[in-house]
Length: 574
Image (cartoon, rainbow, N blue to C red; front, top):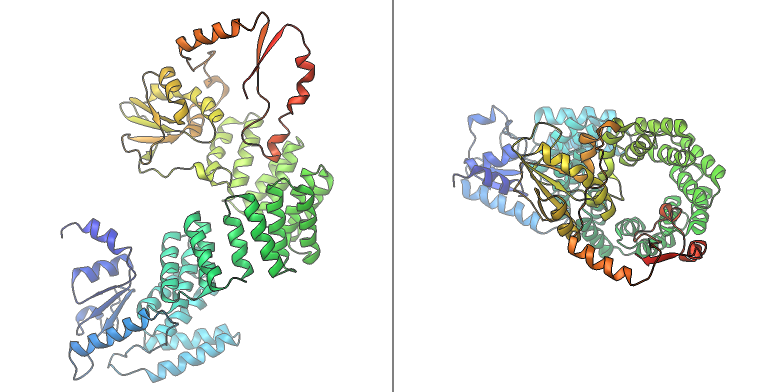
């Protein structure tokens, strides 16, 4: 009972707390959780019909001549309405004297009418009048919050909508608006809680489920997003945007294409659906089909910038570089704030070795969206490619925000090492990306070991013995679920940002991995049996083949001229 940290954590996950005057209700109110508080008026209301200290608290107080039993009956009726999971019927909150506020209701109805007629200014004036006299009016609070959100006053909108859902917890639309306000403020955990409350109140609201899917995707909670969109499609199987979300959440590219085709079939003229299908086809390396689909999107809606830049990507993959560049520039002309278009142009220019132009295009992308992870990452690669190491490594830290690498990110409870003195501390270095990347970043492990009191290395399970032998003073183990036995942690790919900021900091050595001597001897004997000549190990393709990577590989039949060289022994390492 004295563990308030634990109680707070529990309470934060609740949708509603009901209490008389006691600490549980106060704690919930302080956490921003909706509270229904019952009892008689007290001084903490400061002369109002609410408790100004707690915006999420709704008061249930006895009317003249009735006891708390009657108050609890009314609360039960409210709960029954919530439990029915139907769109709520709006009821006015009591005025200070306990009587329904008919004037407030009439003014609120007028405000709603003005809002629906497009006269936001008149609606705002009326709703402020209502809140001056009835600050707990749920519909007025809801409308005031929507109006504040519309004019960009997100903090004000959030505060009003918090009060609105406290006054009427079964108003799904108010929860939805609150979720949008939180998203605008970048408070995504709070937005998710509001969205969850919204669909709990109105589980048959298909639009709410689609919006929840979009939010969960934005939060990279793909599993929950798949559940949400599946619920939406059970409610309405013919909803094209839901199929679009399902496509974006598909694990297999083939499934994404199939879902996008359904969306296009449901909305044949929707340019955004066509554009998304084109992107999915591009990911399958079906570039000609992707280009045709993106071209259909641009013809359906010539002002859709994202369709133009998607067309540019597919044309570049087909080798039509000049046309691709023109498409990206068309997209930028249509939507100068579309960071994706600037980034795609920059990447094309980078691949053409037009480095100065590419850097300028990356900068334009980041001016349009300072948090565009793909542009940060690609710009970093360009800087590293041109020898600008310090800035390049700094930008490389954006890699975990990109679609290709975001699944490698780990959210550990251990604080990150940022280069401070860690002598005497335990440093955890954890694996990322592929085995080849692990080998590369392992070149930093010796120096990391010298910086720390003790080094803990988490690597691919297949590399444990090799790394344990190569770094005998480190604790080497496979990747664990939630490591806690270190003071600080860092991703392997982030070590160069601290240890390789210029070329002088690369050590002069031949190798850093140590093979098993017994196995070395055994293989020496086996190869000797192949006869004299240079022994050439060969491999010809990566396990991960993408359109970008294919240019770096050749087919086995292309090795003919090498195989024709006499005196060589080829060993297949594939």
